[in-house]
Length: 123
Image (cartoon, rainbow, N blue to C red; front, side):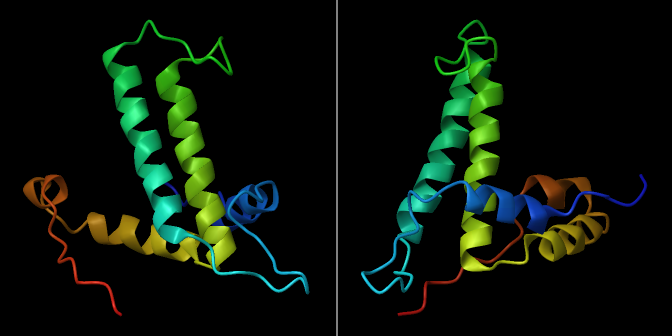
């Protein structure tokens, strides 16, 4: 596989620039802290709806009736992820490239299982 030519940070800026739902400002124009728990829940919800679309492939999306429910939900998941990264200044492009390279060193069982350690959130 050759080098990835897409700049994921550019996609993050694009998605963030077109979505103001979770990005509010106060009267002075200062950004307010986004509801990241809600945003990640929406991302997970889109994945679950894509799974439902996979189980019922005959169901087409109501907003884009020429597209499968699965494809539209996955697209919306990506939009939400890129918006999240763009809004929080996460360098998703670098993280993606590093993780892609790291995954090449893993065995198949390591790729399938969750080999990460989850930590409790900082207070």
